[in-house]
Image 1 (cartoon, rainbow, N blue to C red):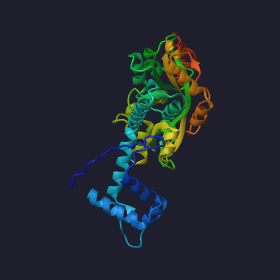
Image 2 (cartoon, one colour):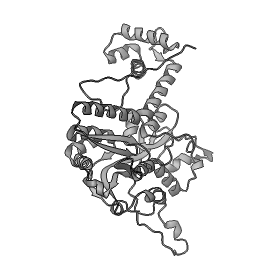
Image 3 (tube, rainbow, N blue to C red):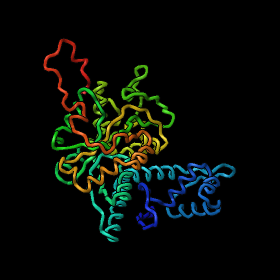
Image 4 (cartoon, rainbow, N blue to C red):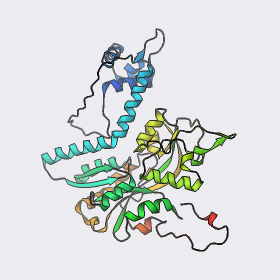
Length: 386
């Protein structure tokens, strides 16, 4: 087999980049053919001639050592099975690395800014994966010359990083449950202390089941993931998130609520993905049928979205850190009209309370919830599930 090397590079441009796209002409070309159904239509969409696109495909076939497009006379060109697998494998790999690519790009931008004038404040944040945080980072840099050194981690790991002093601010998310929330309390309470920590409202966002276009399995609730039809188990392949992530905690909570054992969900204990976008990419590629994630991630990959629950995303810091210059700049950005407009562009997001400083016990209704010690017979079954 012919050896194939992979080379990465980056460039400085007059305008900054939004997101974490890593462009490659081969995959740009394959996507165009796949989306537009023929070389002719792909060439038109790319603003190139048919001859140019045809020649580029032949050159890439030489490089890859495999045919990329079927060439049947009188029929539209189609990607070969190899090209289709390659396209989706690259998409999934790049999507998994998106948080790290974004962090690298932001770090290089900070290095450039420091070399120019050295006047930026730096704010390290460990946070659960979220699609609005990169927007905040860009806005903070533009408006306040505040460089947010963003590291994505699960909610539990982000709070642990705050407790260990590895960041000044952490990000996590929880649903606004009014009753018992045992899963969240057990995971988060040991890492948060009323009076010592303060919350900063960031956003409210919609979580739900991301499914293939048209929802072919007709999934409506989490219970459908383990349901059977006429006594036969439905073949629903679930794409799970990593342990300690807020979305995994939400799924654990919902499974308890429905009385479903994790083992009853196909794929729940399989190797997980570590971001909403990675779950969406897996479903779009056909590897899985459903996964819990954000409406914005579902839309990005052309998936259908079945709403399950809205949740609050909070930033948290020590009480004394609220007056730190970098945190003050962060709060100012979050309270501004530009931020509210930016977050409103994401499907399923709202920033109505962004920037407000909140107490743990006031913002988390389940914080002080206690199950009664003595219950009448049969009353336990009516307690909120945790």
